[in-house]
Structure formats: structure tokens, C-alpha cells
Amino acid sequence: MKKIINFLSLITLVTTSFFAQSNYIPFKTDSVVWSDWVRDPNGIGYILDHYRSVGDTIINNTNYTILTKIRSTQSSPAPTFGNEDTIGFYRNDSINKKVYFLPIDSTNEKLFYDFDLAVGDTLPETYFYEINYLDPFVIDSIGDTTLADSVRRKMYYYSENGSIPVSHPDRILVEGIGTLAGFISSFRGGYGLGANSSLSCYRVAGNIIYHSSGLGCPALPVSLNEVAIENISLSIYPNPSEGEFNLKFDKKIEKPEQLQLMNLNGQAVNFEIIENSSNQLKVRVNVPPGVYLLRLGSRSEKIVIW
Image 1 (cartoon, rainbow, N blue to C red):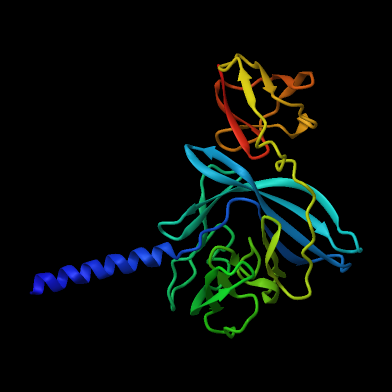
Image 2: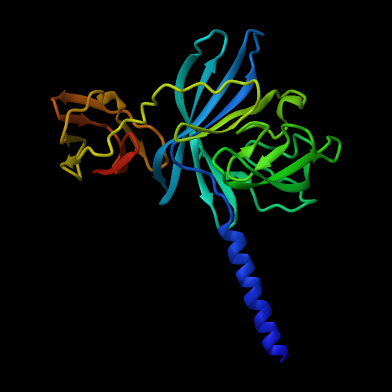
């Protein structure tokens, strides 16, 4: 009888664990935008820092989502946008309920977000949150919320050693989205000393899922990486190549400057387009032998240089 009870307990534990895991909401990796509100240092209007996913890449045999940043100044009815730059790459570890970030200038990833937390836990150190620099935050309580997409997500309320009430509007970590103190903030938010950011908007496929009251959520310009090429056939030859190769498409590419060449560390590689016809490009590179990724929009093709 005791063995049967233990066996049933094990079944219950495994079943409970399975369903708890299946309910976890991981980070989105496709057509997602986070917008952080930041005070304009010049005191004119305000600034939004937008972070968005622009496709996948493979680095050290690991699949990552490319993360870019573009800043807009909201000092007039029409926002002014700056350049869009790749700042790094992120990946989900859904089994352990964690997200990892690989900076563009590094070969070592660090923890980005941890959603495997309990009341009383201290927030772990991440790439953007240095415990040695700031007083540690502690999880005060855990709740849940349903946003515009009707998905139920866990909410982790945290405070600085209990000194800030749990009702603090920014110090909430939302499963699958990040902290309301700002997507890549130090978790302190607009009320922290030396910090003044907060999450203004969260969108998936253009749909607003979260929008903080009174702050902007402007439509972003089309990214160079968001070219509609899903239905375009691409071939590379010769491949392997000694440094010159041809790209052939089944239809005309309007903006060949949208091409990107990257090494397996995610670093951009310079190349030259030496011939450009209606549906074919001839490319020249001067790089060490190895495997490289040719990117156009959300697609990646491998090219071997010897």
C-alpha cells in the first residue's frame, strides 16, 4: 500500500510539474516591440527607446533572436526616429523559465530575465542589473494579470529590501514581457536614483498588448530587417566560394543594401556589391575562411568562404 501511495504521489508531482511548466509564457521572438519611456535630458518632450526582434541568427550553434534599438524623440506631433542598431541577441530557456542575452560586442551570454521565482527570492544579477552596484530587490508577492491578448501571465511584485510598497507602479516583473521598469532597465524604474525609465508599450505583430497611461506608443518605421521576402527564392553560387559569389532571386530586390553578412559570432562583416542586375547580385568579400550568414529580412543562408 505504501508503495502504491508513493507511486501515486510521484504521478501527481510529475503531472503538476508538467502543467505548471506548460503554462509558462516565454518571451516572444517574432514581430515583438518593447518601448521604454526615458526623460529627455534636455528637458524638451520625452524620448522612447524601442527594442524589437528582427529575425533569427545562429551563433556558436545556438539559435538566437536578433534585438535592435531605435530611439524616437517625441517633441512634436510627428516623432523623429534615429538609426536602428543591433544591440545583441536573446534566447529563451523555456525549461528553466529564463531568458539569456548576448551583447553584440561579446561572446559570452548572461542572464536577461528569470521567471522561476518565489516570494522571498532575491532577484538574480543580470546583464542589466548589477547587484553589487544596487541594493538587491526581493520578491514581495506574486499575482497574475490578463492583458489585451487575453493571455494570463504571472506578475512578480518586488521591492528594495521592502522599502518600496508593492503598489509601486514600475516594480513589477511580468512573465514573458519583462519588468515594467523598462525592458533593459536596472529594475529601478522612473523612481530610482539615477534612473528614469519605464515600459511604455509592448506590441506583438503590431497589436498593442500593454500600454502605460499617458505615454506614447508610435508606429515604428519599417526596419531594414523586416523586408517581405518570405516568398522570394534565393540561391547562392558558387558555395563554397573563394570570396566572390552570386546571389540569384526569383524576383527583383528593390533595396540590395538591406543585405547583411555576419560571422557566427553575430558580428557584421563588410562586403561589396560589384554587379547588380534585376534579380542577381555579385558580391565580393575579403574575410578569413569560415562559415558566414547572409541575411535578408528574416531569412538567413549560410555561405562558406575558403
